[in-house]
Length: 102
Image (cartoon, rainbow, N blue to C red; front, top):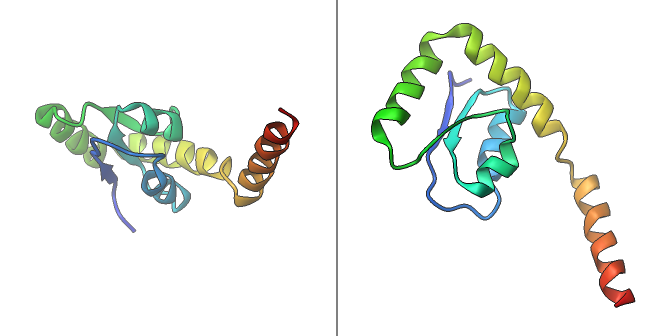
């Protein structure tokens, strides 16, 4: 029920909060740090977390531009759908099986 989720993190292990927002249909503005870039793909508007002017501009732009919000909402729903617990379990099992073989 938000207009936009803003996540200007300086450090992330993976980036679940932006993905959770995307799964709810919220457009996301996030930091352009590697972990969030990997998690969100092209489905979030990425900005340098310490650039206050660019971050503020992105927030204003996203709130004012209904088409942009809808665009990132659609992309975010698709991106979040790629991350399932079943897929995570399968990939974890595969890594364990590969480790056992070595």
